[in-house]
Length: 359
Ligand code: DAH
Image (cartoon, rainbow, N blue to C red):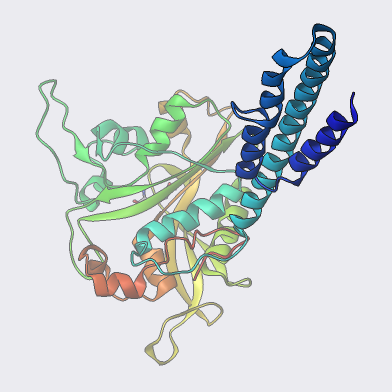
């Protein structure tokens, strides 16, 4: 290679590595290899040389051209990477920063309470099951060991729908217990579910609403006994009300679908007319429970000689009112924005056992 070309080579390669961005590099390429570029010009001059010199110079120029083109490609890749690094650095966001609680909307206490129930029972291995609001008489009553003339039917203030052509009369479910039946019919034991949802009864005053929510729980296994029922529900009460030493008592009671059946009371005090959950000498009933009646298991095709388990049910508005000090049930359904702003929850405050259940 002639000294001239060596000098040119040094100059061009220096130009390539000096290009500090993709636009600058492109300019270098045009200046060197473009239609009017330095190397292109030299190529054009080849015709004026003697054949021998032309061949030599031509080969040298071709090599130089390839070398510079290769250097440009290399620099291009380098600049591309640097450009990407710069963008990544400038567009960086800190995903660990807390979210600003600036949203206008609020989560309704019923939804919040359901999320809390799911968090607590989820951690105990329960999954969520669902069933329809419009139920067959059989699921709402019959399968649950409540035969047609049973007094429990009158107590439930049932909303009946029009009789179907096949003679069956659907009802608006009066409790979430029919989801037990549907689950046991469809899932092979062992079973561990909770079923939150809407329920309906023809009743309305400060503590009753024609539509309200319940959560049902069901655990079926080969060795599940009353001790598991007690442990599970004591744990639930203490986690939900966030009182580690909350007194919990089981009082024998009757529900047709369990044997034995019990009602659960939690400790409270009513000193000075103000209700406070926790040790205080008084009791407050919050839920019903029991060991699933063998007839109910058999109604779902589950062998009561082999399987047994417990069930429980409670009112969601009721436990929400107790936990969050909401005095009147009817206000839950009034869609009053001032009420929701006061009693509602920030949307991103998703309840979890580790992050906290309450605000
Ligand atoms: N279904 C009952 C009600 O609506 C609540 C209930 C009580 C559910 C005892 C249960 C249970 O699963 O074992 O009043």
